[in-house]
Length: 629
Image 1: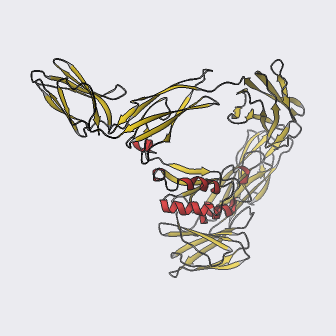
Image 2: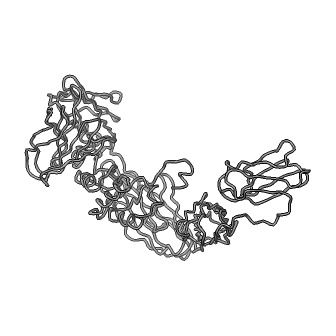
Image 3: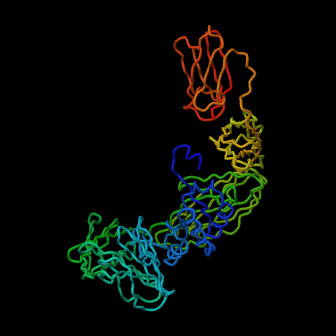
């Protein structure tokens, strides 16, 4: 945080971004009174893969006190109930889905289109109508089985109601005057339903029939004279065609906010040369298509009209001359920490490197075809070669999560282990892929030979030192470094300028006492640490040096605004004055014109800390230590 601020950046971080609200709260509570931390936190965030309550509310309330918004930043396969819980209990400002895949939009068998899932449309009742920039406002329900959230933008209010009981007539109060549309979706529905236009008068009241259990309803502000129809889903079934089959079925679902009668018009937008696709009933929502006799890509267009408006979508279909073969995807290894996943793109041979005592891994290759076939029993991993004397063990090959996997163990002899997976493709040669794992002898970690501080001890107001580490790796691996604060006096706030380098200045040593810093040195799998302690003494009132008879008077020292330099020998003249930092860099360089025996040197251009002053005269060069406060 301080480093970002020093660079003029407004960037803040998320905290604690833990796997579940309970875990998140476990990270927040130990540092809840750390004033240094919270000024750099821009969002209290959690994932939702564990115990959520009552911790969501505790994170929310803590965020309100600190003025920090909350966020749910990852969960899989959510429903509208999860959205409501995160809004009502977590008070979230941000909400995300992860690993949605077919849980949200289900691809057709040809991977040319998508159909909304059974959870999509209820979530749409929130996510379509509530947009970034809307402000959530207070909304309450007199019935605990009917949940409600409301949002406002530019004086207009959108309200979402989730019903957990039977069909109910509801009365909504406090709406701004104006026109409103109402849409609702039942649980598991493949579409949503518009309920037409409703005028809210000056009394702010609206009454309507709320659908049965699980129905999500949105009351949204309506503007304009007539909205275009909404096309909710559009698809071809089957999603691809293999000769000699020559037909498919096109279908569309649409509705209209004003409940206008909809008219449908199917057409062939493009097709392969020589093809003559025939749409049987082009004015119906569902129609068959025949004549798909030439291989290639067919594009069909659906126009949905409510009279004044037309909405359009395109449906893509691929016709294959023969059944598309399966394809192998990325292949590689799942290895225990600290290695993790090691994969390469299709066409490349994955080469993993591990060292003993790690001696096992999971072999994996992705596999699939357009028919979404089950590849159980169609793949087998084998050991192609291994080092002399090795006796690696390979267990049963399985098909799981669109991948073919096997566990290898007992890779105890250093060297290359080569594995191959064969996948049967009836009527054709097997599909194959190879991967390599090189096992290395066990190695030792990095060596931190020394850490030197310059200066090793300070007297205030000097408040900075330079830490320099000499590190090496017996195997010659690339090393990474990271400085951390281990212990400091109460109230001290040290700051590294290059925390990830072996050489770093550390400033902010403004409180007397002992400062202990730890250097972590890493290679690919090892970490070595070493501490260094800096002693900061109370201010002595002056800077000590042993050049008191050099014929120059420098005051005040320490100085804040400017430094007075005066030669005691009036026959001598000042020619040049320069200031050097502890890295040997010139930070002030002034040539002196005339016959000056004394000058005032401004120091506003340099930051606080210790420097070396060099005064060049006609007779000599004088060097002194100075301190800028």
